[in-house]
Length: 72
Image 1 (cartoon, one colour):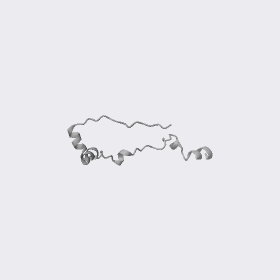
Image 2 (cartoon, rainbow, N blue to C red):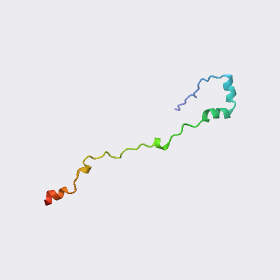
Image 3 (cartoon, rainbow, N blue to C red):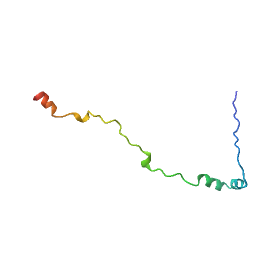
Image 4 (cartoon, one colour):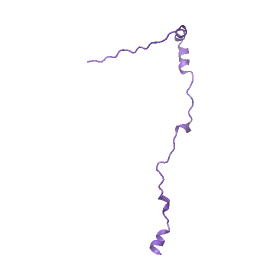
């Protein structure tokens, strides 16, 4: 069994100005694509954060401690 959908119809408000502009595709294109979106700087598109959280025990090692423990 085939499922068919009805074409969508939307009501449009037509005024004499709209019908005159509808005849000119250049005007419609300019209205739709006439301005470019606001520029986004590359700095705003990148988020930086550390890959891992810093380990508080990382810098607690004393390299001379083994001398005191084992040789002293």
